[in-house]
Image 1 (cartoon, helix red, strand yellow):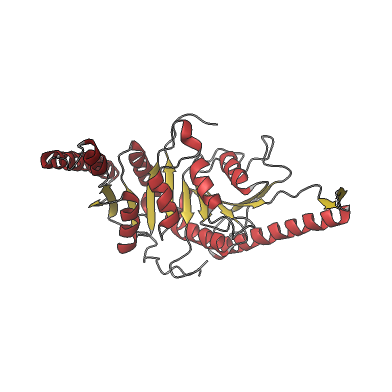
Image 2 (spheres, chains in turn orange, yellow):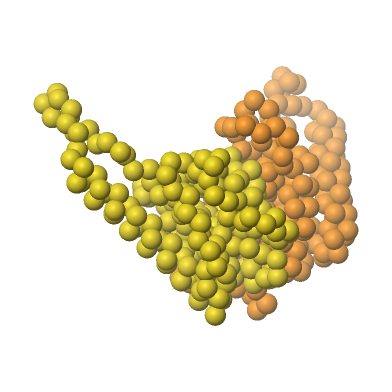
Length: 166
Length: 187
């Protein structure tokens, strides 16, 4: 049990950072690069997952099947947003001099992140967590919560300090 | 061969404000606190943390091994036919002793792991409810990173599948790294 078969030659690990729409993921990425950079094996993986979900309420709002253009424009918009997030993340990595590989997927974010982590044999999954507002105590972003429980690899949850402490 | 440089014991009730600090000097390093208990998972987590983090950041990394003892009830009440009977002091002492023995064993096993990997480690022991105690201790110790195994932290291993690590991910002030048991092993 002690001999981890996942250990790479130099002891560095394959790390994947999940980029979500909240700035907490960028914070998590920064933290990881600041503190764990020597431990990361190149390239660092960044994953962002576009959810299918908006289409359910669009269908409801349109009383039936929504117009094709609406769906397309929403998809476009989503893709743009995801790309922008990834770009910002890539900039952060470039600032720290870290090679990056980006992965974009569509689907249910929490499941896809765990699946990809397994497929790509990730050894550390990094997630941000947006614990803010009145539900701060009870709600760890559902994606990070899911991944903590279901990912097969170690998970690092970096909370973004909202400033208020109990 | 490095050995444990200092032992900080924060015994008594939950770590209070007057509890001893692990570091008196403000070290600029990266402090990693690993919470351990009796389970294989936490020892694996400790090994993992050492292999991964310390191996690559040896210069300024400080490792602290934290163990939380379950709070020992000072009085046991045994309802006997409607009357409460206080447990005799003897059995309380025995329980307390057993807890302490357990703690010592856990800590020494953790320290062995550290030694075998040539790593300095501070040790800390705290009392009370594991979830809160670990959070508080991590804060008191100014941890930069808290590492825990994924389940079985505490004595009630079966009931709470990782509820402690879950709680910590919610509430700890610092980033929390949850180490799962390696693939292929069942727990």
